Image (cartoon, rainbow, N blue to C red; front, side):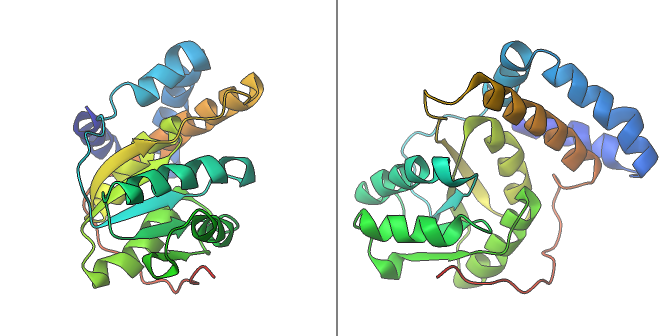
Length: 214
């Protein structure tokens, strides 16, 4: 299904313009998210492929704010303990250094941890991660983020040449309903707008310097 979504956005994205974004993108996003927890969230999550224990060259954790860091790191720790990948890469402007520190606290060897602390968007997550991992032979990744974010993330990372295995890290049960609705609305808008900007089909890496997470 994610391939079908990508092909649809390729068609819409040709002849990209701000006008096209307004005419197509925002109405589509509104339709997706008009009832966020009834229509939006299932639509964003139900077509994600189920992780079935495959191995990969690396685990990539995407940041999404401090209160989600620990749960995501624990998912990566579980995968490392099961030998599903030999290394972990953390990505996110304010999240990466803290997640790297948490990984060490949970027992992951420092030599297996790397990352970047420049990205502020999903597009930058993918670009900066690819710039650092691909030259080191990483072609397949287990991608960790919250379920609503994974469809867009998978499509963007795949467009840069990665084989992507989505691995959801659910929101905590204590997450406020208002915040869940906000995430669904944000992802609905992001899914459509990224498609219209051409970020779901094969393309070259941007040339951007990044900062390694410390």
